[in-house]
Length: 160
Image 1 (tube, rainbow, N blue to C red):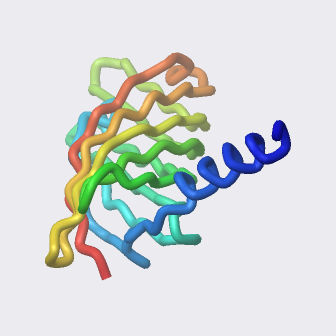
Image 2: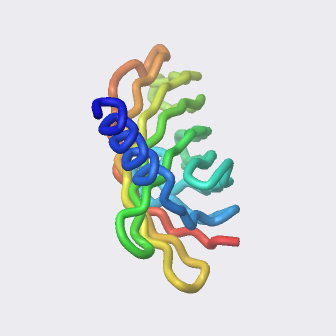
């Protein structure tokens, strides 16, 4: 009886995790957030399976006294909530570089690496539009960027 009970629990657990996902094979767009000073990022997602994907984001900033870039890569797991609503979580990392010069002698630059987590919610419309809201904590390892930063962003992507 114990074996039958355990088999039933295992079967129910497997069925709940194997529900069909409808994530797009590819999605490209913008991730609009503060990104610790790097602003809007170009974002690309590539499905790796039925419920996991790779996301790559490139953000850059340029102004009169500064310029920089940040490249992030994340592996994400996606779970369906209801209909077109999904939630996802992931982990990854990246690298970045920036320089600052204000003509008053305050010059500095930094190249850094970081590890990141990601958790969010998304809605896939009937037409090829994907909207998402995510939270990404990043822990930087560099001379200037050596702390924990929190990034909240809105994603707008075209699915194909």
